[in-house]
Amino acid sequence: MKYFLSLAILLFLAVNAIGGENPFAAWPPAFWAALPAAVPCWLLGLFFYARRLGLLLGPEHTVSSGRLLKTVWLCNGLNCLLPGHLAEFVKPYYLLTKNGCPPSLTLSAVVGERGTDLFILLLAAWPLAAVGWELQWPALAAPVALLWLALLTLPRIAKYLSPLLARVIPWGGWRQVALNIVDHLAAQVRSGRIWGGLVYGLLAWLCAWAAVFVFFRLAVGPAFTGTMALGFLAATLAAYLIPGLPGGLGAYEAAGVLILNHYGWAYDQGLLLTAGFHLAQMALAVVGALVIMVVEKWDWRQLKNQLQNFRQENRL
Image (cartoon, rainbow, N blue to C red; front, side):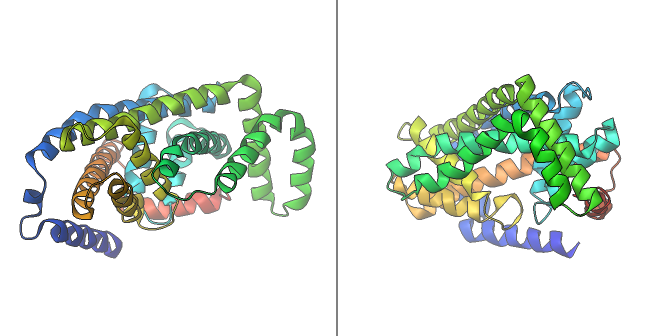
């Protein structure tokens, strides 16, 4: 409870610092007209993320489209509330309790998701170099290339990797989880589902780009281009990789303000636009997640402890 109270106070102080006595008056009318226009893009992106998750889970456990959408929405919403990236365990916990999916199967799908996301993020990061941000491309590309090399060769090396993992991991629970994840990932590559996951990831990211472009185009006018939207998206999503407050709060705003300043907007205007856009996304994700939790009859006050117990019991 203290954590949520602290987060609420921090949000209030941040918004109040932007707008003074009446923070909502700081945003121009165009801002409020732009927000609802971006919502359909964000929702369509969730649909593609859900389709990707279902594809990477494979035919072993059939999960309905509605359940997949709830899973993705819950993860996004709780990521804005729970510290320490604890929301990463929402997917295996939720699908285990609601559909009986083994945690190792869901975690292998999450690994596939992260692999496709990192690949797309690397492709989307080129506008950052175009505005003068010094990027060490070998340092960025090498981990992604190694990850994809490991994924693509996994079906061939799985029979050698599994005995190696069995020898080097002394803990039985961790060893079995690792072996199961290797088997599921190899099945993803062997069946070609990883490529379908990449396509769905591209479609989801295209929706995220469209949400940024539609919002800023309506909020600031035609001076905001599609390339700028791509640069803003890459910078703010990369900020999520930095450990910090839930939902990337703070890092997201810093990255957005810096990239908008490079594009010619003043710091105060960039902060208004970035913070408003980010807070609106967080509100939509959190409200949707809380509605799902009420419908599913989850006790949100005990959810954090349940997820921690789930992680310990499944050696995650």
